[in-house]
Image 1: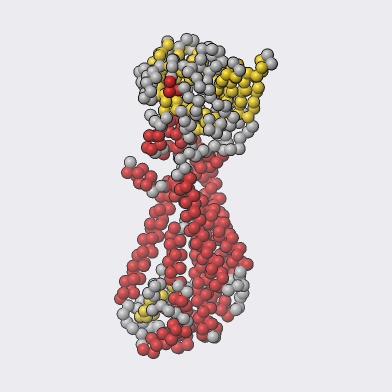
Image 2: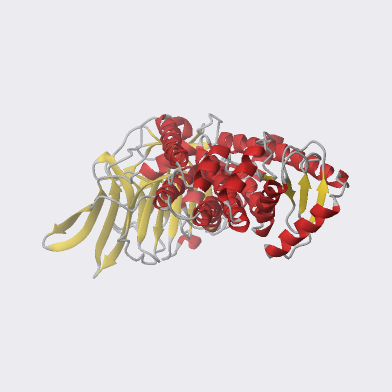
Amino acid sequence: MILKDLLSFLAVDRIGLILIHFIWQATVISVITSFLLFLCKNSSARLRYIISFISLLLMLLFPVATASLDSKESNNNVSFSYDERLFPTQAKVLIIDGKYIGTQYRREEYLSKYNEEIVNRIGFYLPYLTITWLLGVLIISIYHLFGFFKLRKLVRNSQERLEYFWETKIKKLITDLGIKQKIQISKLPGLDAPIVVGCLKPVLLFPLSFFSGMNNEYLEAIILHELAHIKRFDYFFNLIQVVIEILGFSHPAVWWLSKRIRQERENCCDDIAVNTVGDKLIYVKSLVQLEECRDNRKLIVAANGGSLFNRITRILGSIKDDKNSISSSISGFVISFLCLFVIMGFIWKQGSDILKNTQKLKTNENLIKNLSNNLIAFYPFNGNANDESGFYQNGIVHNASLSADRKNISNKAFDFDGKNSYIIIPKPTSLNTTGSISVSCWIYPRSCNKYESWISKANSVAWTSQWRAGFGENNNYEWGFTESRLDNKQSIWNDYWTTNNLIPLNKWTHVAVTADQATGFVFMYINGNKIVQFDNLKSFEKSDAPLYIGYQKDDNVYFNGKIDEVRIYNRVLNDQEVDAVYKLN
């Protein structure tokens, strides 16, 4: 229970969906970035750096935007999961003796479940994906924090000042580069190369032996490179980069783009140093004499970052095109594509039976509480036919007998013999409404008869039911909802029937129908799933007709089977509420 609450608190499904979207988002960004960098291969390192860094920021902003959109959709109280792409309705106009009697509407194809299947298939793995991602973020964050605190401890211990000559020289270089920040300069044992730490109060650290064994021109060139990092606020941008690396560690495109940013960052600082020194050869020799650092800590920026060979060849102009960078670009987005297709393909192959209704099983308590709103008739059949909605419109039982319900609990449902048994509510005052309604119940049909109803609100005069829910004209080949009214003293009805998702015999099935007078929509559900819709509902006429359960008065047809948990609302239940009713008890 604790783990379940924790997963709910972490919103694993929502995070998982964001991670799924991040797969294709980062892939698209990396492909576009690779193309732009290829076009800019002969442009300045600064332009390539800006393109790369903006692309990395987009890899952070896209998931944030996805989360924001998902949050807005989640706050919508009424949402429909059906696919609008429906096949046309078949309508049959009935005329008797030259008079219009009614229209039968049939939807020959049920709603497409394509989008729902994709969501369900992915949804099964969302908790595992999210937990794996969170563990990865935690481990990598601990690693970086450990390195960060270790580095800060070293900085606090670096108290050895430079010689007066170099302090004066470095201050002049700082002024020449136009750096306004106050920079702490110290020596620190254990370093292989100069490094810069911090942004607002940067610290420039040198190895103890840095100023011995190398001539002053070379030392000045190396120092200029480090000061260029400070001038460009590279430490600050590097921290942002590290955060994005941590959050997006699961995608190869993030690592490829991050590596490219570090390469271009060093190239930018090289260009600043070369322009200040004025001699490419001197700067190249300074790099050669500076042993390449092997410390891969990402929270520091140093003169030895990137490939030394590539940097030297770029500075000297031996090659205009960084072939290694192009190769890494191609491999980066190829790996991204493979990652995308492998993950999506694996998820798609999984069976939908296990994954079905994963999202719907998490109905919250507030939704369940809402199921009592506008409930105008409720017959749970707990040993009797009493109405427990609060309107006390109790039913009168005629020859129907108590029976076991869908959980095989005795005296929790009513059995109807299909001959002369039914339950009647003579004058259901609360049901005399012309507004929207929702009707749901559990049924266990043993056989099907033409126009056999589970629930109907019918007068004693033939063909004047206000509405009914039950089987259609072709026995169990169709079922649905019928609304009827008088027109010039002639009874007119409209049938909304479907021939799909047939209701099985000798098996408990939850059926529900909603009729929305505001929009004209009729929706039908089986076991919590919406299967069909109609958009041509006619207005109800006010009627004091009795309510029948297990009997169709108009056609004198009795229901053969069991009925349980009858609920009637004077409002439209949305998809989530119908599913919650289905899952109650």
